[in-house]
Image (cartoon, rainbow, N blue to C red; front, side, top):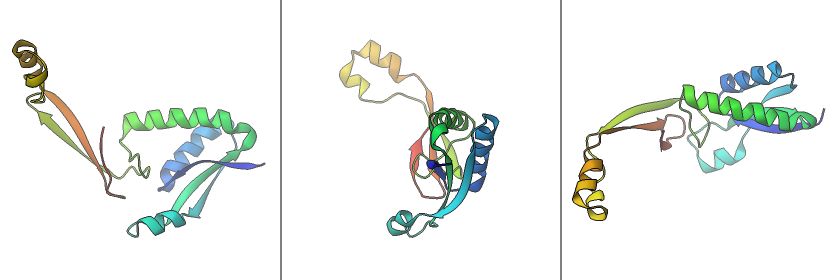
Length: 136
């Protein structure tokens, strides 16, 4: 087996879930804890380890398809940080009673009023592991 890195995760549970999906697709894989020296140098507040998932080189393209499906399903179920991959995320729903005010400058008053009085919700997310803020 010639191992190739497929993905790295901050938590072992996510790596194990992907390993189970790969095992169900008859793809041999290994999860191994590794030290990430670049994270320690950049951000001293985070731990310097990750859980790396390795697959055999011959199964890499098949594993990549399973990994993309895993990320799609994971994104629909729970938000996860696009910066570090952690699922320790706080979600806040923000309700906007009006559209953006710049609409008045671009469209005539009837069209701008139509969009301006449309309510919409937006979800703001904050990663508790690395502090990254993102929208979902």
